[in-house]
Image 1: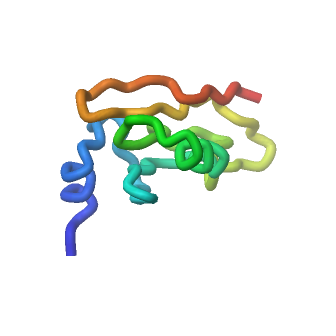
Image 2: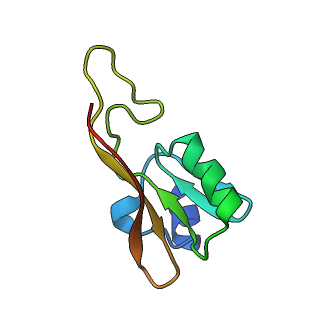
Length: 94
């Protein structure tokens, strides 16, 4: 069985985007606390990228909801074979 590090290396996940959760869905990498809406958008639009990611563990992202704390701003980003990272969608602080 492959380790998470081996999976991340195999799928070319940039080190600055690597998180504690990694999934492969229809050939795309989903890294970190990515909202389901962005996964659905990725699968619908099928951009020429390796995957999408949310760096770190921002409060308010899926699985990181904290009562009475509010949400931190964070970006969902794409990454490709050339190492390019682009903002796919920004979520504001609330």
